[in-house]
Amino acid sequence: MKNAIVTGGAGFLGSHLCERLLEEGCRVTCIDNMVTGRPRNIEHLLGLDNFRLIRHDVTQPIEVAGEVDYILHFASPASPMDYLELPIQTLKVGSLGTHNTLGLAKAKGARYLLASTSEVYGDPLIHPQPESYWGNVNPVGPRGVYDEAKRFAEAMVMAYRRVHSVDTRIVRIFNTFGPRMRPRDGRVVPTFIQQALAGEPLSVFGDGSQTRSFCYVDDLVEGIWRLLQSDFPEPVNIGNPHEMTILQFAERILELTGSRSEIAFKPLPEDDPKTRQPDITRAREILGWEPKVDTPAGLERTIGYFRERLAETAGDPE
Ligand code: UDP
Image (cartoon, rainbow, N blue to C red; front, side, top):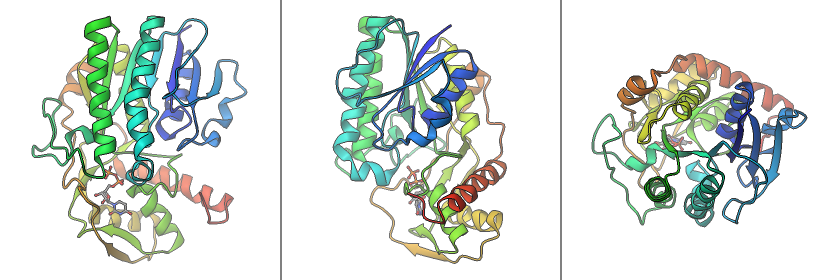
C-alpha cells in the first residue's frame, strides 16, 4: 500500500485528489491549515482507516513518521481574491512550503508532484499556451504574489530533481471547477452560479471579452493521477481547451440555471489575463489524457451542488 501526503488536502482540488488516492488504494495524509481549505470538504473521509488529517501550516517545518511514497503539494490560496487578501501567505506557501515539502520528499525518498498553474504564463502573448512558453508575468503587480510563487516553486522542484535526484512531476493546472468550490471565493464559476441562483446581477469584469477555458474537476484529477504514474519530469498542462469569453460564460450560466439575473459590468482587475487556453498536446501524447466531461455537463453538476449548498445554508454560504 502506498502512503500519500496531500498538502491543501481540505481544499477544492485537494479534497477530490484525496478521494481519488483512497480509491487507488493509497493511505492518505491530508495536511491543511484551513486558511482557504474547509474541514467540511473532507468530513466524509475522516472516519476511514486509511485517511487522516494533520492541521499544519506547511511553511513551518514538517515532520511525518513512517514511510511516504507520494507527496502532492496543493496547498495555496488559489483564487485571485484570496491571494490578494493573503499575499504573504501565498508567497510563503509557494516558496517555503515547496522547500519544506521537497525536503520531506528527499528525506523519505518520495515521489513529488507540484500543483503549478497556468498563471506561470501570466497575460500570455502566445495562444494557446504550450509548456515551452516562458510567460509574460508582472512580478510587482497584484497577481505577482501567486504567479511568482508558483514560478519559484517550479524552479525549486527542478533544482531538487537535479541536485538531490528527487523524483518529481509538475502539473500546470488551468481553470478548474466543480463541487466544493467556495461560493464566495471570488472566482468566476462559483460567483456567477451563486449570483444566478440568488437572482442577483452577474458581475462581469471589464467588457467580458477576456477568455478562459474551464475543466471539470474529475478530468483534472484523472490527468494528475496519470502524471503521477508516469515518469515524465517536465511540466504538463492539464485543462480543457474549450475556450469562451467571460460574457459567453455568463450567458451560459443564465441558460443552465434558468435565471433571469441581469449582467452588471464591473471594472477589470489589474493584470487580468486577456486570454487563456491550454495546449494539451503533451498531455495527450505522454499521458494519453484529454478531458471527457464537456463544460456544460460539468456545470450542470456544479450548479446542482450549489443549489444544495445554498438550500442547506439558507442562501447564505461562507
Ligand atoms: N471574473 C468576472 N467576474 C467575477 C469574477 C471573475 O468577470 O465575478 C472574470 C475575471 O476578470 C477573469 C475571469 O473571470 O477574467 C476568470 O476569473 P477567476 O477569478 O475565476 O480566475 P483567473 O482565471 O483570473 O485566475
